[in-house]
Length: 114
Image (cartoon, rainbow, N blue to C red; front, side):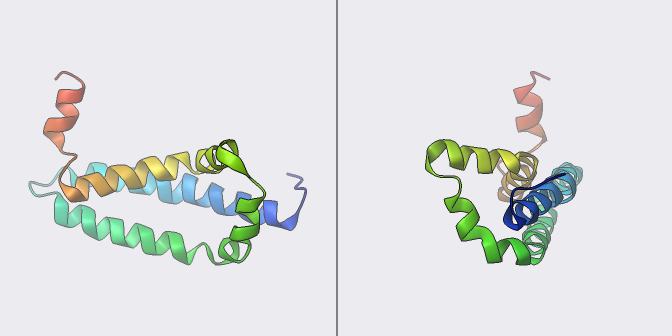
C-alpha cells in the first residue's frame, strides 16, 4: 500500500495490529471469561494484559500520535480515528464490562430474548 507519509504508514500498521490481533483476542477472552462461574477475576487479568500489550506495541505510534491526531481535526476526524480501531474498542469494551460484572450470560441471553 502507498502512504502519503511515514506517519500514515506507522499509524496504519498500529491500527491494523490492534484491530486484527489485539481486538479479536480481547473479544475472545471476554467470551472465554464468561465460561467461568466467576468471570470477573479472569476478565480483569485478561484486560490488564491486553492494555499492557496495546501500549507496548504503540511505541512508534506514540512518537507520532500528537501530529497524527492533529491531522484529523474536528468531530468527523476523531470519528474516523475511532473507526480505524473499531474492533479493538468493541473487544476491550466487552472485556472491561465483563470484568466489572456488568456483562454476563444473563444480560447477553436477555438481549437476544433467550
